[in-house]
Image (cartoon, rainbow, N blue to C red; front, side, top):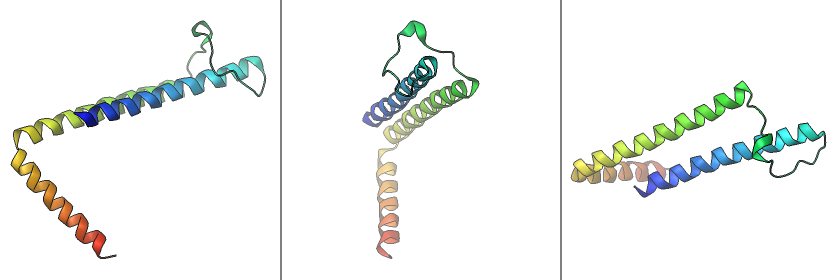
Length: 102
């Protein structure tokens, strides 16, 4: 549950950074200067290129898939808590043995 919120926040942060970068790049090319303003008014936002739109769609799909994955995992853990604890213990032992061999 808490992991969903953290992952969602991170993905939204990535989307915001992408949007800010697009605005800065568009403002720099519109003004023809090397130094771009940090923000652009909403009315002056450039149209997205097909590559940018595809990247944004992929980020949105990734965010949905990750959220669905964590929701499904949470349901499975809630339905089978003992099996989840035993499985986590076994995975922890396996990882510990693999790392201990170094």
